[in-house]
Length: 199
Image (tube, rainbow, N blue to C red):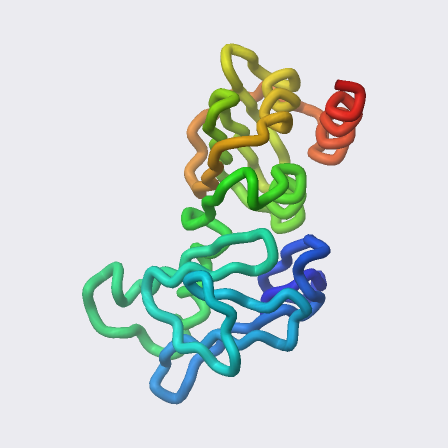
């Protein structure tokens, strides 16, 4: 289940995502099916809104509100046969892991960071574009390290939140083991918003 509700297996705390937005299940042949649950903004696959059941294929790009996810099948990655039915739920794990990327004009970085915090994700968020480039390392949903255009720590974090043009990517790899952030995500985001408002 995908949606804004914390009862969903993949929770996306965005107002553009319905409480119960969509679900992924498996048919009798152990093939993955995506179904929109009557969400207000719909579910798009490869840029087109789906109706009814949609049989997912390796590489499909799925849009849930502001989030673009790529579906990847372990069967396709391994080049072999599908695993037993009990392995099926693992097929969707990359959706909030190494397959998250998008453009800054389509997603709010504050919303993205809140989602990573809410889902207790670990990995590296990289941001790059006309304003520069930088990264934030997140451990179990908590920001631990940031660098951006020669700055490190909180100043780098605030600078990244000001980026308007470019792209972002999030991978499950931790690219930096150091720690230069100690404040919780909520405090950092509130201060970033205050600075942007004053700027």
